[in-house]
Length: 189
Image (tube, rainbow, N blue to C red):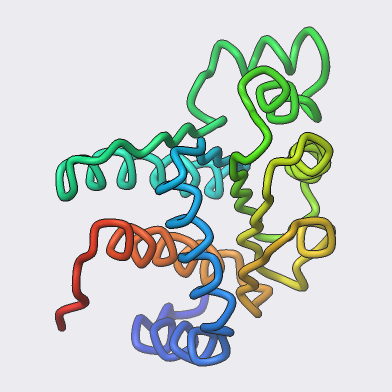
């Protein structure tokens, strides 16, 4: 068993962060801000750790936008209704757990944000395809080589790493960056 080195982890993560395309991040932040101010729904989804990130985004954004600005933020994580997810998985297909919900609650002009390390999860790809077909703008937060999500989404923030933990770390940071912009917070060191 090799020794884990905390400092090496942070150094490696810093190298990945240095290779991020900040223009992609700025586009994503402005896209979410635009949809939010237009009273559109912001839908999120992902699997595993990415599901938690998708849920974390909505928790932060719904609460903090209202507390800091008094405005409503119409965010919904498609990962949070276990009954609905398992109903689709059992009665239709796990591939349809997100696309089925989008068909039910999504409207033209809304925004779908998918979170995926590989960008190749079939249920997330299906969500993008469904949203695109409904006139819902799609934004993918991906890692690895971006996979199919990078190719199919209208917009993408790509974390250039094949290390899932680095991808997840940065995907969570994106949520916090976006929250600060939505709430008009300044970044203080």
